[in-house]
Image 1 (cartoon, helix red, strand yellow):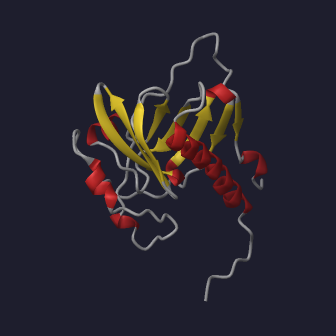
Image 2 (tube, rainbow, N blue to C red):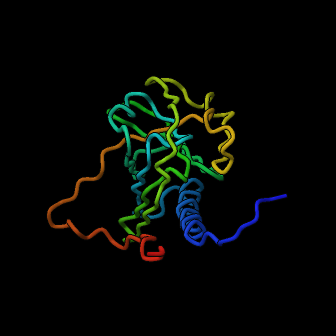
Length: 188
């Protein structure tokens, strides 16, 4: 018999729906490339279960990382629970895999659109890292992430995405578009 629900988790439902908005934007990009001049800043927790990243990137970004999907990315693959993408870091190609549940921010500056997500920071597991130059495709092929299943989280590799946070010019500072946070909907 399934566990009985005594209180509807509206906050989680809203976050899940907003993560689906991010996923849909990535699916469009996977199918046809970025529309027009759109580009994305994606910030995620590097130590979240299921994140796959090179060791040297994790060392540079031990907690959180922001990547930019704009001109130089390839191999974008969007799944039900995560996405994978290849980016160049200091002229070295790296493949990253990030669960949607690890994402703390998604911004499309062209549309002046942004989402901020709360991530359960209490989930910490040993990292599975790759050395620079390893082909992650073979290692990632058999991974199926199910973040709702807590029985086997010890075995899920963790990825870390590396990229410096975008620098803002003095004139554009403060103009980051519409960022939606869920704090306004939380019970006080």
